[in-house]
Length: 104
Image (cartoon, one colour):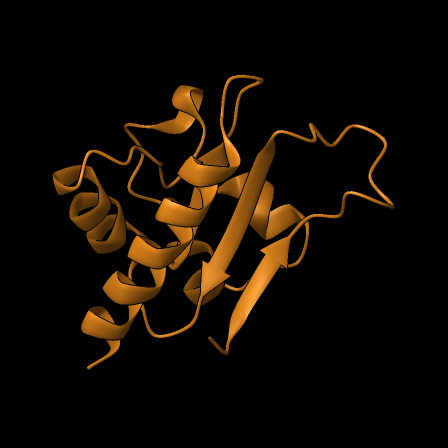
């Protein structure tokens, strides 16, 4: 897939939590993708729990240089020590499929 951007940096940000990934997906509204994945029992979010009620673009994403469009097209993916490679692969397959649907 093209036009997917990782927000933040595992390398340059000393405060980055390695089990949390935030990505912006051009041409996709984060809220729509979250709803589609939720229907498939895959639970991601558009932001942090402390900011879940806000409809404004994430101030954190804005602070690291994301545009409003990038912030609104982002999802937050959290993994645990119990997440398996099989689960990650299943997630990736469903994510690609849903992005293609939302972009069509």
